[in-house]
Image (cartoon, rainbow, N blue to C red):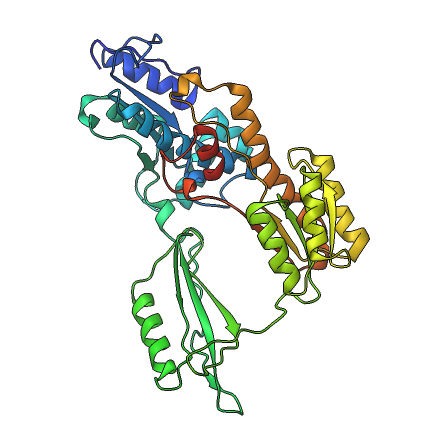
Length: 410
């Protein structure tokens, strides 16, 4: 890094301290620089193992580190045209002041032994030096064509069975009903939270048993392991084959109570009407009063009720959930759909913090509050379904604003 100038935040201890010292050893000076006019530079942010897996940390911390990855991707697209690279690092746990406070162990050796025992890569322990060296690599000319990347420094933890457990399922369930119609099982394989394979077999002219088994056997031959395990969800769906038409069961949500945020228009409105068609009682939560009343009128007052709700305000979300309980006696489904988007600016430099904060308050905090208070009433009932609307922007960068992309990664 001879002749380079670096700015490091959080440099007083831990990874930041070690990185600052290492950068200086390699010739860098620790001063800020404006990169766009220079048409060169490297921006590196620290994410976390929590940006790749769930259950490793608090909800807020995990969301924030997913957001770092999203912002990294989006900014890499914007700044690439200026020759500026943007990357992030996702390290596994190690001995740092932050980790010590999180785990509650004052003994560094005990903490190091603990995280090493949970790790995948044996015989080596992750140190702050290792993360500093990874940052050095991303900052150097050796990584001159690496941008938009989340560099995992986790010894493979994010791709292995974190708890050492593998679940086994009887995935073959095909039967003939008394009328000779084929009732199939829809098998859904979800691996790493992204891959989803759906196959339905209903044609009496083929052998659905063999077809389904062949598919699942070939899929499961490769044991796709995640930090928890591979999951197979079997959803029983009655399927009827008649003149090549499938007639699904009606009123799939009969007797259910649903709360939908952002229900006044768009996806929320469409979902509210569909849920009602399938027998659900619907609470419409939105800030657009007039539009919401119109949706309620279309659905029918006996099957719906509107509640004014700004999802970024906890008291509004509490009121919406409590209204569902007071009106219908329970809450079965919570659909966190409300979201906003800020105008796309030409450069990140033109983005205002107030706009960024506003998008995150609705799209992230709003979803958090919806989940929190839905869980508040669902946990005692030991049942319920919580659904949230994300976006294609949760998988890629450069499609929309930095704030929106960041929020959907979170």
